Amino acid sequence: MFVTRRKRFTLMPLIALGTLSLAVSLPTLASGHLYAASPQHFQTVTVRSGDDLWTLAAAHTSPSGDVQAMVDRVMAANHLTTATLQPGQRLRIPI
Image 1 (cartoon, helix red, strand yellow):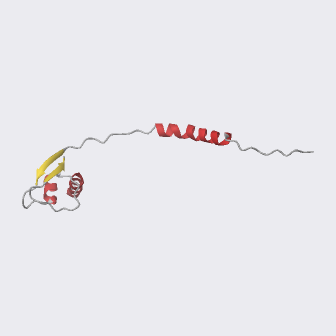
Image 2: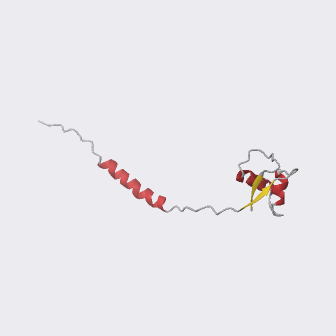
Image 3: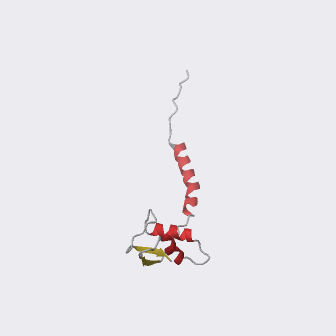
């Protein structure tokens, strides 16, 4: 008579697969480099009556620079959602 043996489920294939995936992925993850952002420097400007964001940005943009990019940087640095400025408001202008 033949006795049928039940196959046992073992964890060995799962352990081998996990070990293989770690052996492949760890060198890739370890080779990544983290870079700190360079520190930004700001100049503080007090808004006067008649000033608008475009003229302030244009005054602080180099002749070959992009004024719209400076407007975007000023808005981001000061967490502005609109270009409306109030006299007496202090703005941080990226240098």
